[in-house]
Length: 256
Image (cartoon, rainbow, N blue to C red; front, side):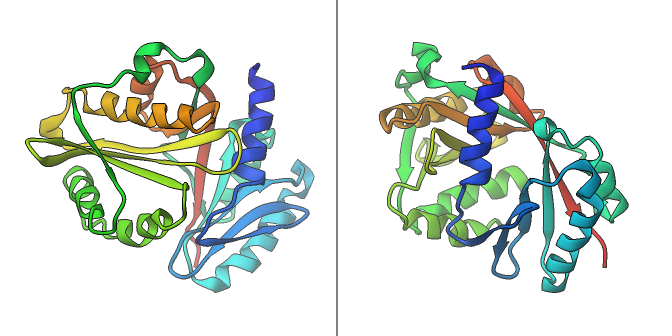
């Protein structure tokens, strides 16, 4: 499938038809937007409006979202063909995205066979709220803070049959690396995390977690695995055959 057709399918599955269990989806003539209960992050995920309409549309969305007093982002993609949208958002007190994510896609039909081989790592699937403590432990070690949001978000999503698979890799019975996959309707399974505690890196844990997830994705009949990769993870997934599809920028409103 060529890139243009793949982008059309990506937009349909993961931007236009996408549903989030914790969010209300609203489709207007100008945008697709998602609204969460406070204090969750609200966002515009797709912009229908053409360039001449952007000022009006941004003003209208601000009138809608700002009174909610919740964080609010606007997603902008390179392939959206709205070259002035980012600049106009900044002019409306949105912060630019200094670390945009590369959307990387793997076609499982053309993936290398080694990606589906079982490694020697101790990989366990997390299926309970109690098990999520190991996910939080790794996130706290890698990023700092107290990542108890995992209990609410992933805990809720684990209750939805077939929607989320969470995995952890263990070394000497200690959680060392974690990752999870969402299975929305459509052709794309979405990969998240892939975080490893510093002292356990370069032991193949990321690759083992990736292989475990890709096997499940293929077994469940999805054609594509997709991940929004930052500058550190992009070279890793690229090495495993993922191809760059587009780039996504999150503009967060910082006004008062």
